[in-house]
Length: 275
Image 1 (tube, rainbow, N blue to C red):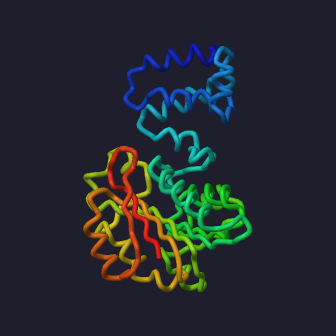
Image 2: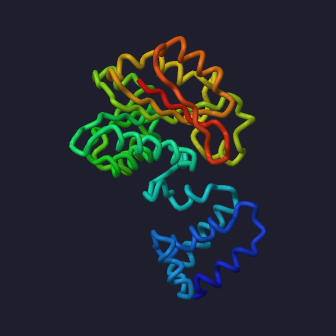
Image 3: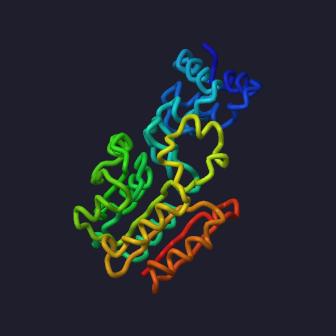
């Protein structure tokens, strides 16, 4: 059997456009059932446990399937998240949104308080999972229009309550009042802006909205039905959406304070609304 080191350099020389160092390391760790890459590095000169699995996964990846779907999981803020074709693969940008929201929660709420939080358009439940881990006293709801996505989210969380329905509607129906709402909704209006691999494999329902501001307007319009007197709403947005969102906030959320933040690539990708 080849060692992890031998296979690493063998795969590194492969000219497939779908392979890179990160994916190769993920394949090797998976084939030896290592959840922590540091464990893989510590065992780099040991034989790969399941070479057959590695090569089977490799062929699917070289055909274009995202490696997270091939493996059946991804990582989000250190948490292992189950993913399949019914949910988007968690992105780095969404990690930043989640961290910012957790920082806010820890600053505003004491350890013996019980904030009520909703992860709207939860998908895989990655955001809810991270918040649940960092804010154990919180009451967390996760909503999604897809019952299939909620089945995945349920597997990725422990005590999060799943509610099926469009955006805020299940929260309204259950008369739930929130301290914090966090949301990464569909916002891509032009499908030509979507990477071909993403469009082929990831759920269109979680990607596309026409107009791009559709979900934000629906949430802003109904925010008073689900948010408490003082609150935070945190959103991932598409770049170049600031002007349109400011108009909507002026229309529906007069008196609130809002801030746009940039991601690590210096693109405006986050909106925080505080009241």
